[in-house]
Length: 376
Image (cartoon, rainbow, N blue to C red; front, side, top):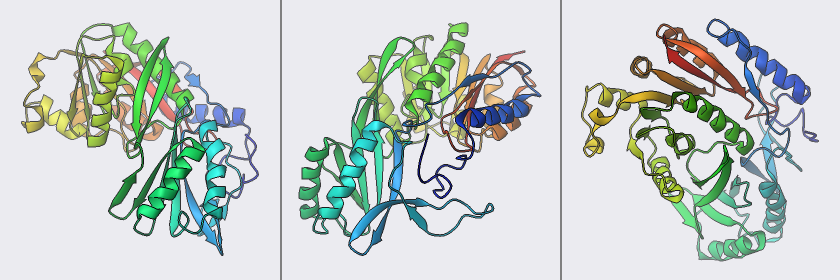
């Protein structure tokens, strides 16, 4: 990827390395962390080096009468500088964002301050099917005049627009986009809400799901448990390889989206429960009863496989103890350091059979990885 802001914009820190060099460096890092538990070569899933990101947020920088997109400055000697730099291009965003973001900025700058007055950020959520939701964030209350201007802009840009300010959310049409991804030869439809978590790199996301499917096919029996299921990103495709599925997630919005996505895809063997991972552990171990589970018979499940996709902090001790009793574990990680930490415990009961690395975030130090474990 070529970008005129490499070296000054803090969004991409690995600008001095070619993409192949970045990938090799990340592979070495993950391999070293997993070496106590896995001796074979990692399966590597790369990313397009540009136009890969389907979700992005930009600050709005006001200079006299003009607005510009802005990003934080590149850290100097490891210290993040204050302020921001104005950007004139961002080749990492997918085309449905790129083709609208600059037209949007032009419209903001020719308006009579209705759209740009106290605007401080713009968020983009787009799909590979060319849907785009633009959320404009303000330090002022939005009125009917703003709504009328934004509605016209929706038509001009062929997109959906929302406005947000303190304790206010203005939805002009929808607050979601609908993504369609071909996964392992089958198309899955996902409703993605503006305020919910979505995987940022559609290309690599498909590769992650297909890798998890490959592991699920090796099992092919029993029931499936998933923690941190989000909107059903992994849940829906993997559900076809198991009898019954119990998927948990703490976010109300994500649970809502997951249920909608089940309906859209005609999937009927998944039960969703709004539980944090710690609560899931307490419920399955019989430590606590939850009103949210009153219509779910936990004893009816015979879990052969569990998938966990935790935040950067990794798994809590209770969840590790719980999944240690399940025959097969698929662990997707956004932090190889905490994955390696958790494997120190999991490797006492399980063996890592396969390991992979997914480059969701080119030109940064972030890397995703996954391991498939089977009980000793």
